[in-house]
Amino acid sequence: MPAQGTNGLAIASLVCSLFGFIMAIPAIAGVILGFAALSQIRSRGGTQGGRQMAMAGIIIGFVMIALVLFAIAIPTFLGVTCSAGHTCSSG
Image 1: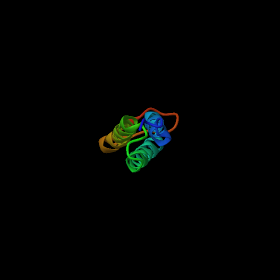
Image 2: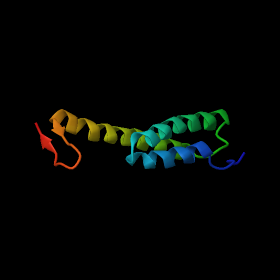
Image 3: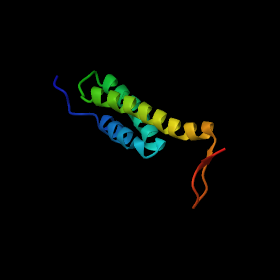
């Protein structure tokens, strides 16, 4: 039986994960949607496409989440403080 098209959740997963560079929330949604898409594709016996797109959404989502966490954690561990209208300083 030919593929019935691409799973919509797989597309949404990839799009959300790519927007994860803005903040972690879309990336988290991308990871969740990716796993949901994989589950749907499996349950439909592989008649629906989008497995690679869902996997890409999961991987990119996890990478984006890690980047956002590092961007928050590194200044915190270095003790960098910033206030509105002033320059940042370590201390």
